[in-house]
Structures are given as C-alpha cells and as structure tokens.
Image (cartoon, rainbow, N blue to C red; front, side, top):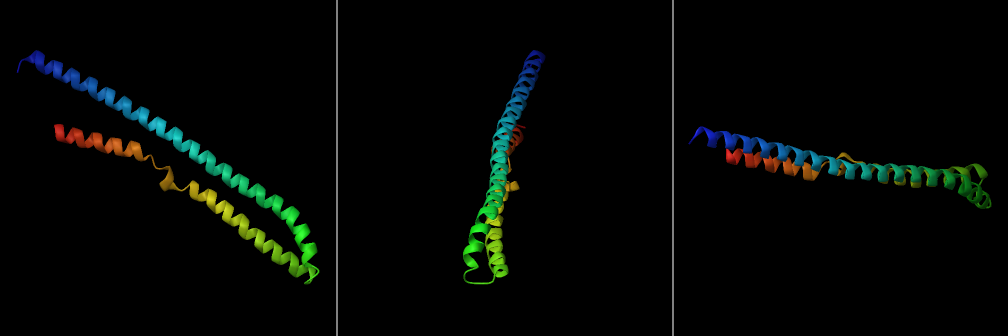
Length: 125
C-alpha cells in the first residue's frame, strides 16, 4: 500500500468518524427533546392532579359533609370525606410520578445507536 492510500484512508476514517459523532449527537439532542416533552406532560399531570384535588376538597367536602351529617355526626362525616378525597388525590399524583419514572425517560434509541456503532467499530477493527 502506498503512503497516499494510507493517508486517504486515514482522512476518510477521520471524516466518517466525525460525521458519525455529529449524527449521534443530533440523535441524542432529538431524543432529549422528546423526553423533555414527556417530562412536561408528567409535571402538568401532577399539577393538574393537585389542582383537581384542591378544588374537589373545597367543593365536595362542603356538600358531602352537609349530606352525611344527616346520617352520622359531623366530625365523622368530615373524616370520611377527607379520607376518600385524599385517596383520589394520591392516585392522581402517583399517575404523574409514573410518567416521570427513570425507565420511561431513558434515551433508548441513542443507547441502541451508540451500542451498534461501537459494535460496528469493533467488527471493522
């Protein structure tokens, strides 16, 4: 092999490597942007759940406690309504937390692409 062929091959390898790194970075940026959208949806869900729980607490406690006082002491009616609404609020917040779980935010495509690239480099060497 001549020196010029080796030089050309090294230049081509460098150019290909540079392009590959740029493509991997672009993929990582795109996937990070998608994951950011998922985070925003999860946070919005938690906020909506908290707001719904607060409004429900104000309105339903008043109405339901008044109705239940016809069947039980007012303190027991208040306690019953408060516990039920707390369970609903907990379930809504938990749903939002599940959307923010680390496993759902993992950049799967980028990881796969980097692993495949590393595999290809190992095979070519």
